Image 1 (spheres, one colour):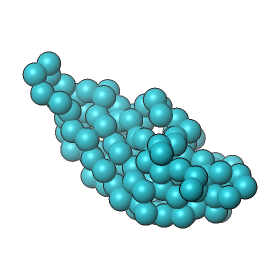
Image 2 (cartoon, helix red, strand yellow; image 1 turned 90 degrees about the vertical axis):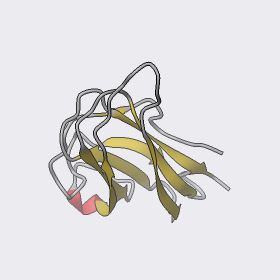
Image 3 (cartoon, one colour; image 1 turned 120 degrees about the horizontal axis):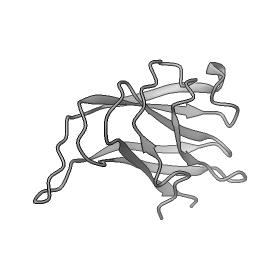
Length: 128
């Protein structure tokens, strides 16, 4: 099953940190409050024309993500420059997670530099 807290959230404004505490990070997944959840991967899809950037992924313990102590830097993926045209798809990237999350834990994502059209990040996983 596919579960996401922010399936249509645009990620486009730079976060400029490695702590996960920026208000520009976007919530992309929240684990089940009772049993936790399993996340297989994150899928990044370009929404149009963007300059190159990087997506940084953080695991949050369920507390306020604006407090760095509640976040752990998990990984990152390079996001290429993209050009939207009517005759070809924009790039989609999968970031493998294969991660069991404790109850209430969350995944936040931010970009390293501001991009024009933005990226959508969808978590693929669920409660099993």
